[in-house]
Image (cartoon, rainbow, N blue to C red):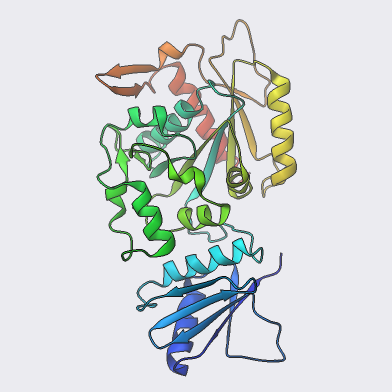
Length: 339
């Protein structure tokens, strides 16, 4: 897809040029053009400076006014630009900035495969044994994930998202107010109660959310897609470094094959290295009954072997069979990154 064009005009020339330079530094996926040129192609999005206000308009005539302090909110401004370009069809939301956290998607062949346990186990393993700073983000109902993170976030995730995407009531406050932790210090955007508002984000909004650079130093995001994959999940799979597909002990292999064939067709079959982006792991897998193919991995044969409870808090054991399976999965995910 061609590079989207953003035109900036109006206001003081020095202010306009300085704003364009700063947007060019933080903006991704679009090019900046200053001034009105009747002979040039119409920009995909126009920014008109009116004193201390900016008016954004796409070719589809959607208008949004950004209040003062554009320099102090340039990341949010660029986020709004990307979002409007994506919704108008001029820009495919993408994680093209090498400084963005790596994304690993975890999805289930169906419900009940232990997808959330594998996703959280992967995040815990990276935190405890690999020196990484993962952030667990669910695109599913909060459900069981809340039970793994006893340290509840003090702020509500809806407030963070609304402020981030639309600049309401100022910039989002310290992201730590919206992030929960487990006993090992693993961070999660999953501590709020009620319906998960991330489920309702468009792919463009999800792109802005995941590239907000406000994740307290996270260097990778474990994105829990569950078993129902919508448009935003397909976008995440296209942009993910790797995707872990979880199935239950070899059950219904034709269902998993159909799903993965569809995802490969929708997202591009291969990762950048030319290897398959998807890694298949079998959970709740009795080795005497089912032996995965050489290209696939086994996690654990018994749910009771890795989930315990301390009061109302769920705990994952990474010391036994489950932990060994998670370690193999982590090795496969990150070893394939460069090979």
